[in-house]
Length: 411
Image 1 (cartoon, rainbow, N blue to C red):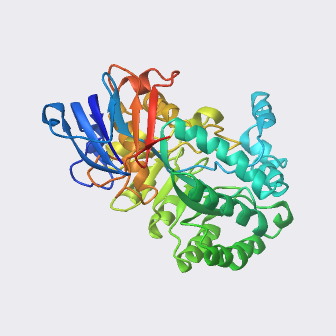
Image 2: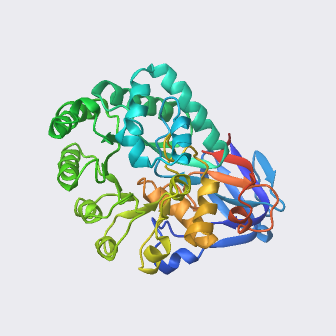
Image 3: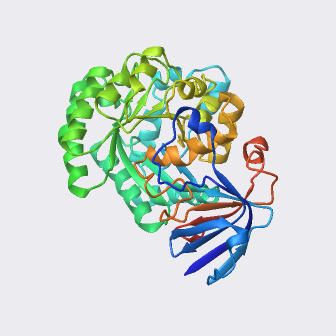
């Protein structure tokens, strides 16, 4: 099955070379072709160019994109989209003056979500989760990372990962699974943190590896959760099972977690709302992608990641949604891109690079996703008629997407 998209007002994120990530000043550049065409064969981009060169190209199906922008689908490298219930009462509690930490200290937060999930069947959890997956696909997300971490028992963590595996099998969206057993300390281990770490390492990880349920391992490296010693234990264990790391770090405090993640060659370090010069130096000359989660900052009213400082230091930056029930109950990557421009002062070019090619890199899939490149997967957003790609983050309250194509198929 072939599809030809013609009269594209502007084809965005066109990369002749299959670059894997964009860093520093290069993030300000977003290569495009105006008045363009794009040809898809089955699930793959096989050709593109100026409309003046389209003569003689035929396809089974033709889409006229007059006045419309075409760009790669969003690559959301940090989500917790598999969860049960919601935490809307905690939203009200925060309005009434309680902090995220206050809510967690009284048994809310992650522990609250874990209790709900533990009492939810696998099928129910799957059905709740796929409603969200379908919604984010319609909003332009074509690749997504999904974490466990709301189970906090061997059975519940495995249940989450099995649901993620089902989503991977049942939907065309590219899915990467991350094991986040070290998300919070269960109440029954409140006085025995090492006992829980041992359970993660000696009980959960072997079974996860046996069933091939995860691509990555993660830790919430934060004061009151898991310290540097705890984090290093988990990273070492992950290496034994060939699980690279993606680390939650510097959300509320900066105390050396980024340097530790780089030491273990983490594919990404995520959050970074708190950042110091030592962190930036640690990231230089590494393969680790900094990932900002601006809609989390928006929802919790905490600082935004200093994306401008990271980019000016010559580093790359990715954007992700952090879709979860407690701190970011939205997977709308269009809002993420807008918020990065409005609150983090990223240019539209930087934000789009961060949410496409660099987001793909943070999932280890940028060789196949995240740009308009021959041989890459045909995962595309076709906008409604708009003036330019700048309009996407500018008019943040509207849905500008007309069509989403994943693996060459309109979804």
